[in-house]
Length: 78
Image 1 (cartoon, rainbow, N blue to C red):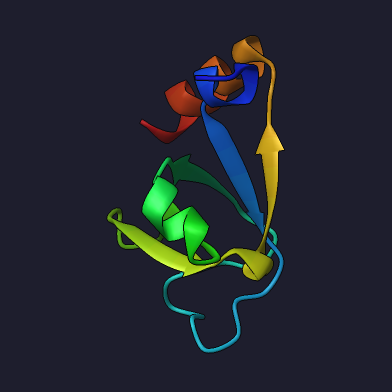
Image 2: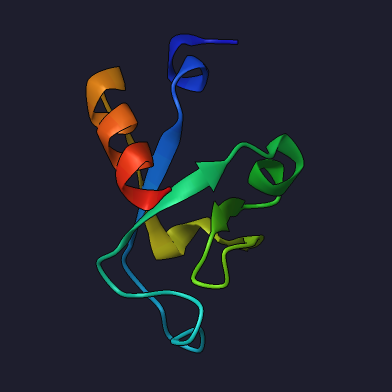
C-alpha cells in the first residue's frame, strides 16, 4: 500500500451526462478502491443511490486530501 492508498480518496464529478440521477456535477464523492475497475479505466464511487458503482474515470477528478479534511468530510456525510 503506497501513501496515496493509505488515505481515502475522493472524486469531484466533472461530467454527469446520462447519469443525472446518479451523479451531481461538481459534487465530491467518496471513492471505493477497486483495482480491477481502475485497470479497466473506471473508478468506483458511492453515488446518489448510496451504493458504490463504477463510472468512467474521465468523469471525475481524483483527490487525495489531508487526513483531517477526510475525517471532517466523512463526519459530514455520515
